[in-house]
Amino acid sequence: MDIASSVGKIQVLPSDVIGRIAAGEVVERPAAVVKELVENSLDAGSSTITVEVKDGGLGLIRVTDDGEGMSRRDASLAFERHATSKLQSDQQLGTICTMGFRGEALPSIAAVSKVRLTTLSRQEQVGTQLWLTAGTITRVEDAAAIPGTSIEVSELFYNTPARRKFLKSTTTEFSHISHVVQQAALASPQVHVRLIHNGYEVFALPAVSSPRDRVLQVYRAAFGDRALAVDVQQNGLSLRGFIIDPVRARAGRTPQELFVNRRPIKNSTVQHAVVDGYSSFLAKGHAPLFVLFLDVEPQRVDVNVHPTKREVRFADNEQIHQLVRSAVRHTLGRAHIESSMAGAAHAHPDGNGVSNVAIPVEETGVEPAALSYPSFAPLNVPVPPTPSAESQTSFVGEGGTPYQSGEAVDIVPLGQMHRTYVIAQVGDELQVIDQHTAHERVYVRDPTGAGDTFAGGFLGYLAATGNRSPEAMRQAIIFGSVMASFTVEAFSLDRLRILDYKEIEARFKEFKRLTHFEDIEA
Image (cartoon, rainbow, N blue to C red; front, side):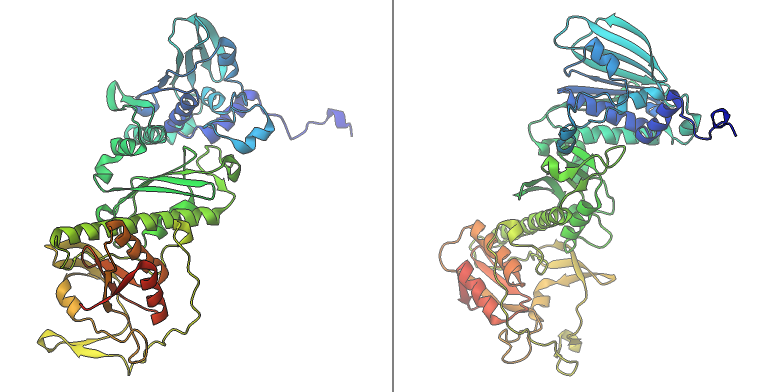
């Protein structure tokens, strides 16, 4: 058999087919085009970016910026596959700090559309304009232009009808574009961002000095005045941003935005950590809302794991998870403490009354090391056994109704009326509880375990051993939840009330010693 004359089964695909296949990984829909073009504008140091689209991006996509622009040579090379200004050596691949780096976006976009680029470098006097069809440059001319770059993409997917057929409605495609532009604005609050659809300005977000201002520009309706600031630095990691006060949480999941080194991503580790951090604060069926910015040393995160760069891989997932969970819990805990302190000050300005605002703090919910509080070695002492059915205590409330202690039911506080009634989800029911009457019905036992087995409930009151600032009160409350696994709430401006004490007296004594509070009569 003549091997040379045989026809092989494996063939090298034509370049235009290769381009269209590659474009399928990067350019999923019009929003992907906008994302890549806006990221290029951000990498170019732009201070103003305008995105104009028609018919949900199928008619036209135009992104204009005032960045550094390109020379004619660079403008032509930009559409060559794997041509990029972001990497100069393979060592830089492990320390990527720019939004783009592969040199795939522009050639992939050009392969499935018709493109016109107009650009002017700040070092040149005459701009450049070039046209491409299906990835091939068809014309290059001098152009009158202002510094920066404008890229127009029209007839998207004209040569890949199957991809065009599976696109959604104009409204749906535009909603994806709007979300992409909002994410870019959130990541870069110093940039003025505009979005125009069919000639109508959908939004204009002027440059602002703080991330909080940007978050409120974009998501004011979702957060309102309930945005809680998160700001934690630990072991080379930095987490900043905003989470929603649980009072304003709802069933919807918008926004849930995560940025790693300014790049919008989806990551199950961080998502789970946020949900875990909210676990004891949210009503059933409600979702946490957040906009978080995680800064990680570039060598500790791999951004080159997904065609659209929407996923990353962390070198230390467990540390990331612990940081995010602790930060969320700490932020929510402090918010409840401040609310409780404010309630005590408002209801009892003389400091002699009881605040009716409970402070739910999940047992052993926050790691002291993660919050830079002192750590405490566990005390190796026995925990009292769970009482038997025969020893469980019952008592009679108003109207002769017996109350039997037993397995606890999940209670999720939802709100409060007139500082007297608590509205709560109790199991599968919605109940209105008179908190004063409920407090009177708590059976108090000996916390030392010398008498009856202590099953939790009201323990006692503590008073400050001197003038204590509101911050000192907050610190004491946090110590209680972290160290001794009991719930502490503000009784007045200088007094604390201890509930649900579940460990032995040694822990309680240690808590009093460290916080400088001492016993008083109720």
